[in-house]
Image (cartoon, one colour):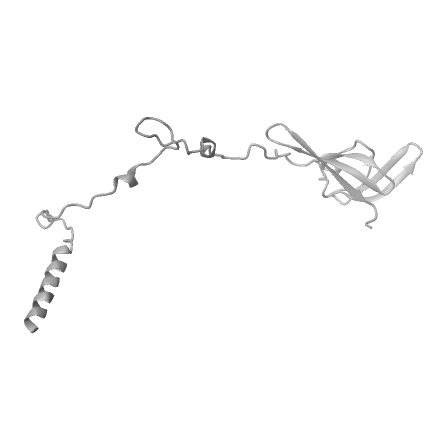
Length: 165
């Protein structure tokens, strides 16, 4: 029994030693019997977006619309630049309705601008990103204009109330 176990151990050691690769060094004699590892051909193939088959036809299951690279969204808001001083440089979000004046000649809205000054506005007066559309008894309606890169102008109605309910 002792002889058979030692033969098995020697056989295992021989197979392990034969399977261990020799370390590469600058000596070509040491690596003469060892072949370099082969790379898989499938990992080196790179498609440029639309893979072609040997019959020079496109893959019918590939959606070409998904391959279009989108650098920037087509419709993004254009920059307005630096705002001028006064009410013309006040964003609609910064404007605060202070009061409404009713006169025989029409209505006036008292609006506090970004510079904390009060301005008297009539319908049609411009702010930096829109204009005053209507003046009601207790509220005003402003129209915010957004210019997009594609040339479209989006409008949004914003209502500012004198007293919050």
